[in-house]
Image (cartoon, rainbow, N blue to C red; front, side, top):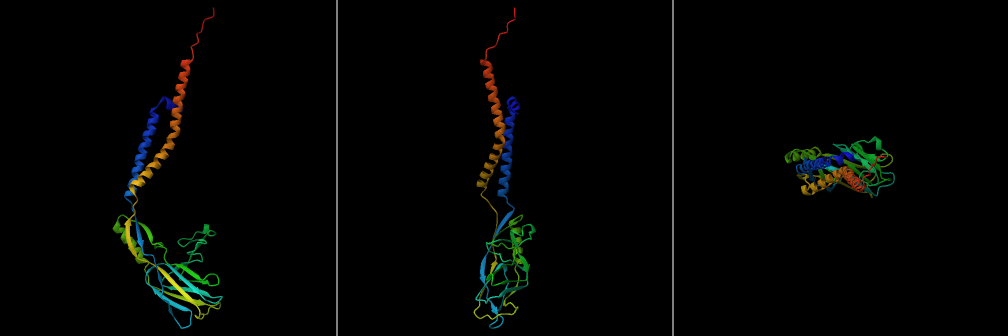
Length: 272
């Protein structure tokens, strides 16, 4: 390779020219994708709303409430319940997700798909119309009603234009806006409803309403600089070895030529 490059310096010019052309082409591709994005960001409210619980019977630990919003979270906390009490929440009109680690930092959880290869690392949510927990282990039940709504209030969607993005986001909200009747019960070890005396219960839901939809944008100048610097760095690494080989070959050839010029020619005399 050294000999080829030393004898043909146009090879180095070709490599440098090819690298610059690729840098310009890839830089333009990154820049065009940054400016003309097919992704849109949307923002919704992420409001926690306290539920007005209606007691079914006096001195009975059974309550209900009705929701008609697009909901992600439902949180229910119980205090003052006797030992051996079970909290049961039943939803009429939808199925929702629950697992003891849901919404907590103690362990990872997954409510969107079942991952059998990671059951020891990730806790999978259970989907159903009702769930229950023992209040001896924890006094709060956290449930996830919808996995399609943006949990933090921010989401993204792919669309051809802003009008289509608005329509798609509104469809997501409409599909997840349901009228749900919730029933909250406290039962003893025999499955009987306990007395509500001394029991404090609090229930909240997180609701979502559309605020705005806008095209996903980045700073084109900043992104172009970053992408150009990255591409230059990559192609520089690719050109370093050929350039080192070329210049070392040229240097070696010049040094050999200087040594040859400094070496006196030996005269060969015929033996008499």
